Length: 111
View 1 (cartoon, rainbow, N blue to C red):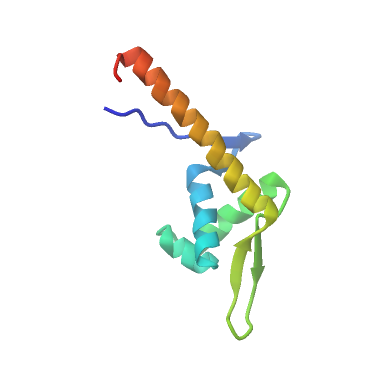
View 2: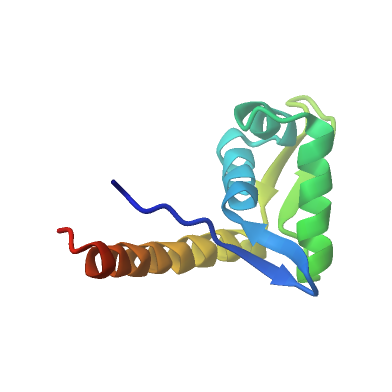
């Protein structure tokens, strides 16, 4: 058996960052596009765009920089703030998962 935990950060009872939302931001960063990032996450573009807007509204800062058209088409990339939030959330959850593992071993007496 392995313990599993899911963490998210809320503000005024609304989700700001979660593993899924951070995975979406990472997928957009890796693909360079909201459309391709949404496809990678198996969600409609509209859902991805809505979640990005929610993140930005709740954080009070843009997490994506987008550009449209041009010879190469449009694209998207994380802003410095977006990169920082992705990194901080990953670090935050990594530490919490270690605590969950430790507590599991203590309670269930397993190595």
